[in-house]
Image (tube, rainbow, N blue to C red; front, side, top):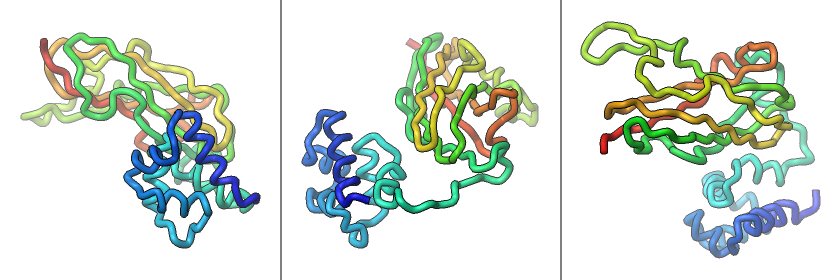
Length: 217
C-alpha cells in the first residue's frame, strides 16, 4: 500500500468538509501532533480512541480510517449469529438528524435520518427498512398490561422505506418522516432491514430507532 493512502484520505475528507487539519484536530479534541502521527502512519503510537475521535471529526466510520492502513490484508467479514446472508453485516454510523432525546412539538412532522455502513462482503440491493412497532409490545406504565409499541403514537408517514444500493464499505443514508403524538411524552419507534424476499437480514440485531421527547406549545 502506498504510504500516503491514509494521509490522502484524511486530507480529502477535510477538503470535502471545507476545514483545515488544524480544525480537524480541534473538532476531534486532539493535538496537532496526534493528528500528524496518524498522517505519518505511526500507528504503533496511536491509540484506538484517537482513530474514533478523528473519524467523528471527519464524519466517517472509524473502520474507514483503519481500512486505509490494512486494506491489502484480507480479514474475515464480521458476521452476527443468525444473519440471513453469509458474510453480511451492518454497522451504525450516526444520527444525521434528530438524535436520541431530541425535542419536537406535539403533532409536529419531522424527518429522521440515519447513516449505516455495509461492513460485510454482500452488496445491499433491493433492501428496505421496515417499521417494527406493530410487532413489539411494551408494558404499560403502572400496570402489567401489554400494549403494542405502535399505540404510543409516534406515527411514521410510511411503514417501509427503500435502502439505497450499497456496496461493501459503503455508507447508506436512510430517512423516515414521522408525526409526533398529540400529547407530551417520550416515545420511540423501531426499524429493521429486510431483503428483497421480505426476510429480515439481521434478525438478532436491535436495528435502528427514533426516540424523541414531545412537548406542548
